Image 1 (cartoon, rainbow, N blue to C red):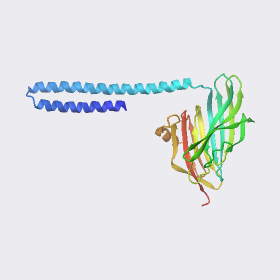
Image 2 (cartoon, rainbow, N blue to C red):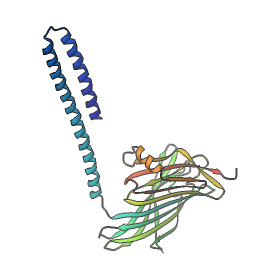
Image 3 (cartoon, rainbow, N blue to C red):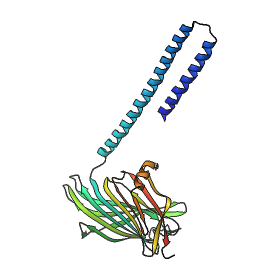
Image 4 (cartoon, rainbow, N blue to C red):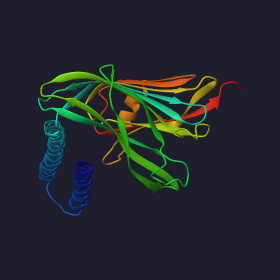
Length: 290
């Protein structure tokens, strides 16, 4: 932005000075050769000034790009490289009664030597209208496995906030993985059911996919019960940085090209989704028999 202003200012300044110079010289009687030389030198001088301004802007832009790159590298160094998700699958199922099921599958690499006791997975969704009672349970953990063996997993409600006349529940799933010292790889699977998750599926629904860890391969699938069809709602795909909530049009375009929309499901397969990003897929479900 600053560089564009400088460039426009330089061009406008050059035009104004040349116009003033032409007006002034037309009012002064001088030798033609002197006028030619004077104009030539002024044009050279002004052109040099404009070139210097453009050069400064180019250097400034390169410096800004370098700073952004260094900040990203610094962020990667500062972030605890404790976990790396080489594979992640988010499989959503829209049930005919409006409930929703989510099967999370991860292949996780613990890159640090330190032990890892617990993993936490955030969960957020809309409750039924006017239901702010924390005692009402919406989340049921159907199954959780670590390397194919049953493991304990607990869901904890953090809060129920009020947004646009709808209660929004926020919580997290706690999994005690209890991994000792040393680098390890393991598979984790969590299968949950959320009451009323897709209660408005005939009008408009959506799912969120957050990227809190570096993820190599990500697959998201939204399926509907037998006898129903799934349709997208434009704009059906959104991507933004979670902290700033700024939409990223380039990332949206890149990821939309990796989506497949079939009669009974939406499937999104990608590699290295942006760390710290918040993705949203919107859809509507219709009766397939009509």
